[in-house]
Length: 156
Image (tube, rainbow, N blue to C red):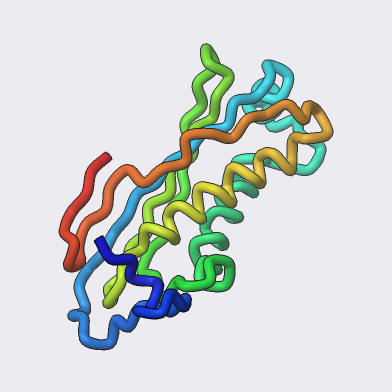
């Protein structure tokens, strides 16, 4: 297997997508943060002093998808057609799961944008709640599915 982000001399390069066809592309990523009972209750009850944690994290996740090419060196700048961040809360596990779905019509996929969106959302939860408890654990960030493009569809 050949790595597409290196030339024949091992130098880092951005992949040339100029010959690829424009297609509809979507990606869904998820990740979770495990928190203490105190943090979970504060988020659920909207009692965190910095504000409504999940609303701020949702905005941060969307902003993250839009800034991915500025954070990941070889990512292409994409014109996103949609970016959505949602959360599910699991009180029995003291876990919050974040989901990020991103869409575009372009020559390259949006997997990195979805993964960045989830990461930014979870990091924002951590940042807003660290004054309550710093022992939160962010985990299991992964691509769930992607559609479109030359490599075809993928489901985890």
